[in-house]
Structure formats: structure tokens, C-alpha cells
Amino acid sequence: MTALSHIDEQGLPSMVDVSSKKVTTRTALAEATVVFPAAVFEQLAGQHFLTKKGAVFQTAIIAGVMAAKKTSDIIPLCHPLALSTCQIDIAPTQESSLKVTCLVRCEGKTGVEMEALTGASAAALCIYDMCKALTHDITIQEVKLLQKTGGKSDVHAGR
Image (cartoon, rainbow, N blue to C red; front, side, top):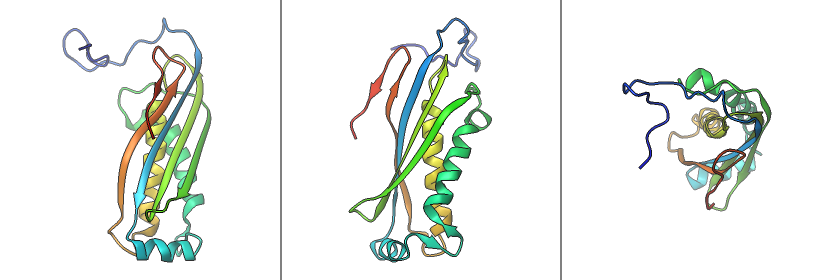
């Protein structure tokens, strides 16, 4: 088992020192699933996911991008990163759900996994917020990292 990178020799929280790392292109892809009761999903799909609060997909995309850019403000030991891109995709599935993916890329010394996970999570939360007037029986499931590249170890998780 390896040591936790955010804990120093005294057992205190510490931001990882990345000053000696090489700048590389870092990418990460994360996913969240928003599950609806079937009748509510059908109603939303019939309305093209437009609610009284507005266009669900477009608003959730903006929320996800905004959150990814602010990840270091809400995850205490994350490094602030200048993102090159953040792309949120929202797709309906056959299971009365929406699959939210967030792809993030930057040129940096540390990875963008947390930014991708934060972007996918925030977009999913925005979807919940925009649709909760119809039901509170919406769940957000399986927030997970699918892929990361550009660092010491690449990850390609199964979908």
C-alpha cells in the first residue's frame, strides 16, 4: 500500500508539491447518471427537457463548466488549474436516465480528475434542481472517473 500524497510526515494535510513535475497535456473524463421515474422522464423528454426554470441541458452544461473551473475553491488541497477545455455532454438512455460526461484538458503538472468529477457532479446536481418540481424521486448515481491521461499513470476504466 502506498502513502497518501496529501498527508505530510507529521500526519497533517498538505498540498502536494508539483514543482519538480514536468508540464504535460492532462485529460480526464468523468461520468454521472441522473435517474428519473419513468413517467417523469417521458414527460421531460416530451417537453424536450424544457422546464419552467428553463432549458435543462443547456443550463446544466454551463453549471458543469463553471464548477470544473472552480474545483480548487471547493476541494481544499486541489491545485488551481487553467483549463484548456471543459466539455459537458448529456445524453438520454433507455433506462429513464441521463448520462452526464465531463471531459477536461489542461497543460499542467497535475491531473484534472477532480475537475472532471466536479463538472459531471455539478451538471447532474443542476439537472436535479431544474427537475425537482416534478418529483424528488430523482437520483444521482455512479459518479466515476472513466479515464485520465498525461500523468505518471493513465487510467482507462470500464464504462
